[in-house]
Image 1: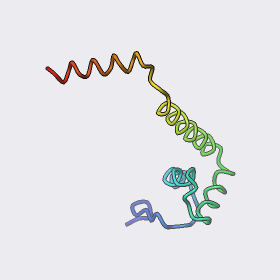
Image 2: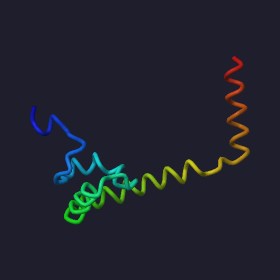
Image 3: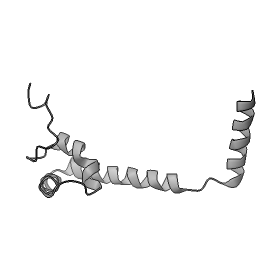
Length: 90
């Protein structure tokens, strides 16, 4: 089995672009061990595409959070509930 076929999540070695994608969620949530966090940051410091990817990842997470927290207008909520009630009665 090649190294690409066997991905050891606990390998704290160097981080490449593919590995960064695997670790990004934990990195953003500050859940990585210190050595992995440092390896990710070393890679990001040297890789413009990964910097852009990290920015996009953070933007998408924030935008999703904002949408999830947004209050649906009462009129829309009422119309949607009415529609769903009508559908379930049929």
